[in-house]
Length: 247
Image (cartoon, rainbow, N blue to C red):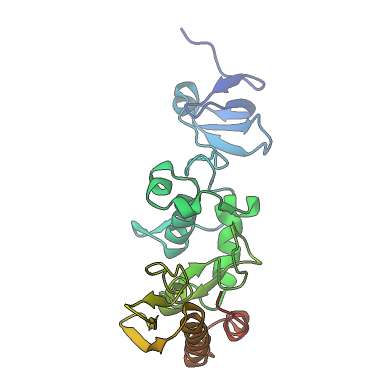
């Protein structure tokens, strides 16, 4: 016969934590405290307690990093995953999923600010942002060139056109090895992609001249896109695009 549960008893959970009984009312109303950094308390019943079926909101269940935390923000509504959770999960996936990193090796050095490991903290930022939840992408590059950190100060929501805009900065062609310049038989041609087609910018005597034509056209195109979206994007994003310089 199992002994009666009493205050002070310690049990193990299926997630690998210890919980201590801090209050016992009835077999169906038991308060336990997790014996970890967060000391989270919750009510449970005798069956769940004895079988370890007690969830810790601070358990890093998302790629070994992210946890749901304590707070009002949910992951689903009416059985459907919320945009806030999908965005948060995708961000962690890019940085910490081994499978994802095999296909996106450029993310190997990227990380998420520890404050955003907590889904509740991410949601506070997400829902206070005027441009979240309207089909925009979470972007970490437009505000800080070469940025490797997802955080409140480095991220913004941008339309898909802008999100891909700065990724399409030209390629290295032929022997020139210079962005925007393509080696022909006796000259170099310059091209610019506007997302839907490649625009021919002309032929030049040197690769450097072709590259300069590309730089001029690329910077002008970025400003054109910035002005197209002004008022529909974060003003910080607009300023960053207007000050952007091609490499």
